[in-house]
Image (cartoon, rainbow, N blue to C red):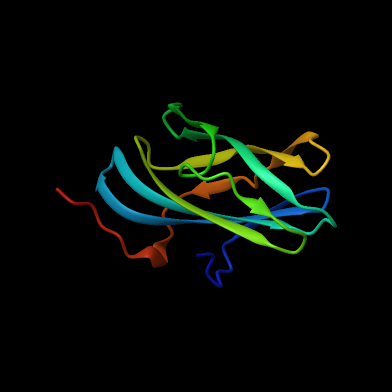
Length: 136
């Protein structure tokens, strides 16, 4: 669930707003980090949309690329009426100290037309206030 968090980022595609934030869950070593991220997709248009696919990409500070692509969101194809929102949470383990998450979703409007929704770029970086320490 999207928290009241001053570190969230926002991207807008037409009348669709996507907000997101990250949270460092565990530092397993300087080379393995577990992150959670949350996205909130708001349908501010005047018609129903269906979220069909995701194309999420993560690039870590070592140049490794991770992909989460495919139909649905945890096996769900959310329908959003005008004014509704959908929240999606997931975790990822990366091999670098920092990373960026970016990408898009594909949605379909009531007329059957598909369109891309841009995600905000989410920085996966430990903040001093996170208070995490390495686990050896």
